[in-house]
Length: 226
Image 1 (cartoon, rainbow, N blue to C red):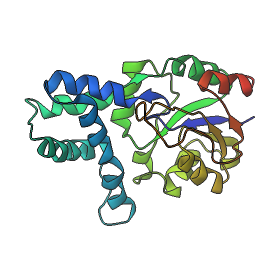
Image 2 (image 1 turned 120 degrees about the vertical axis):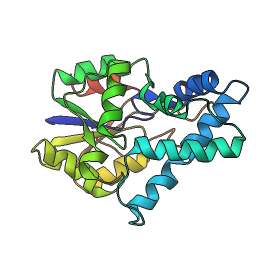
Image 3 (image 1 turned 45 degrees about the vertical axis):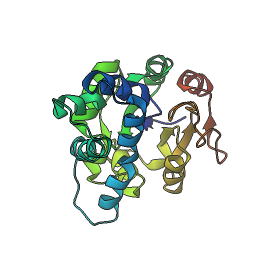
Image 4 (image 1 turned 90 degrees about the horizontal axis):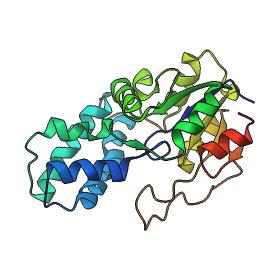
């Protein structure tokens, strides 16, 4: 039993690929929408790594997404009529079918909050879009850094005035859980085998004996008695 569950969001709670591809198809007709979405997401880690490595001060993910949109648009040889509107695709990501029910069940037992690389503004609008019932918004912006840096997990625990061992990090990504476990957080793994499309090869299975290994968020809630 823990006092709070904190969650990775992109991929774990929401289906970014299909949702972004839908918006790309609307704003850039004629472009391979899934290829564009994959390329846009492909710039995500490199952009954050420059900040994690100390080569750049903290920049909110909203702004990194806009910079990455410009990079990918040039690569594809296209220009969005309204880039800011297309960038808001990241605020319109649909939850996986089990997400809202699973979060709602867990909320009856403990605090629930995102521990995401998304900004407070992005996470708030995303929650409104998908009906995600968070108690508060935690993650990168309060830490002024990006996962998997330890400060992001520890800042989330500190904001709740909880020791790490009373908090569970829930994610579909093994590296997220590895970083959290080292710091003393409990860990919950939920696979999302189509996050990157039908040919995904990563994070299909747990890489360690995480505290909870579930099939989805509703199963995780059931396993912890929520």
